[in-house]
Every structure is written in C-alpha cells, then in structure tokens.
Length: 61
Image 1 (cartoon, helix red, strand yellow):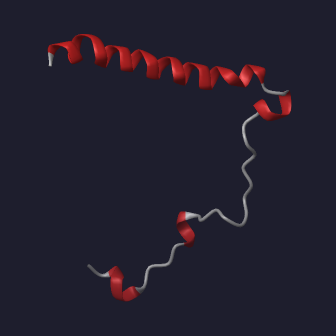
Image 2: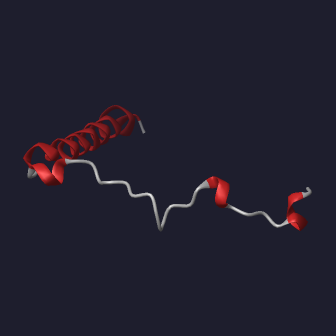
Image 3: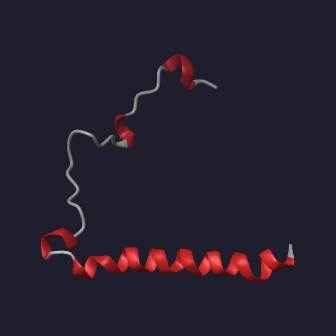
C-alpha cells in the first residue's frame, strides 16, 4: 500500500494535471472565432426560476 501512496497516486495526479493543462492550453492554437466563449441566447431552452409553477396541492408541506 505504501508503494501506491508514495509513487502511483502522485504520478496519477501529475498526469491528470498535465492532461488538464494541455486541454485548456489548446485554445491558443484554435482559430480566433473558435477560441471565443460560446454565445448565450435568452430564449427557448432556458428556464428561468420564476417561470417554474408549483401546484398548490404540493406547495403546503
């Protein structure tokens, strides 16, 4: 168990860190229009919390 704790677990953490670093750094090499964040549209598909209706029979706990 000590071998896993001293060698294997830290190696897995470092490997996962470098995979995440490469994935997030890949934006540098994308074309300019693809590197921008995705647009957010207000419309179909978004549910606002105020538009959720709770039946009155369930509202009184």
